[in-house]
Length: 326
Image (cartoon, rainbow, N blue to C red):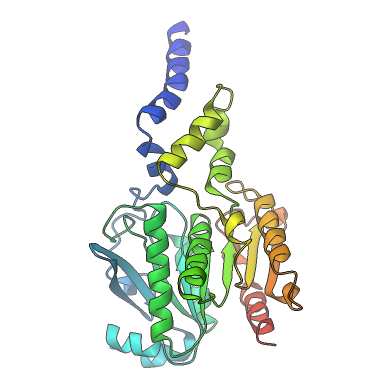
């Protein structure tokens, strides 16, 4: 028994030391990109998982190719039989809005809750572009904050270029919410192009605060210096993903979706982002229409991944986007 206790204490104390010596480990934990679940899925064949969907690969920068699924809106379903990627690309200009979906960490674009959300958005009449960042799924390269942001911005601009003037929205979930605000800010600063709208599902204020809230970080919080170690290690990995700072400068309309029982990224983070964005756009007469938040009671059990189960999701999304046109 004594040996077991000593062993557990040794392991407990060793973890922060290992992170200090090998800071890249924390980056791998944040992205969890090597866990390519679900296993044994051929990502180049989305028809096995999603109807009315084609797969393509886009070169987001030299040496990097990301895998993308393009799922059609309901208006195009009956016309898609037997059609290839070129036809799908042309279909982007059919006048229907486009949603670029930026998923969270771990796994691929084929994870169940991601696929189910895409099905719902497709049935509601949206084109959906869901993809795996560099290093995730079948995409080449290694993940980094700058790299993920470049991937997202490239796909947004590609969609705008081929959408025939239709609106293109960024929908980020979990890790993807920080990527979404990064990409939107770069679009605004570099080209003066304000992203048509942002939907942040289960967001966090910054990756530092999100890491501190993680159950593993709390387990080691009793050890002195662990909080500073995490901050310094994130800096070494060049991981910031600070949506709280981004939203102070963003002009894009914003819809926040967050469940009170989210045990991964606390509900108060969504509230904080909503208040920041509302404050940043308070000078506009339509600020309350442009910045909205939908909260889900804990009793619904949606947690971190299952907001797609809300039967009113399509309606509230449509109401929000229509309100931007008035």
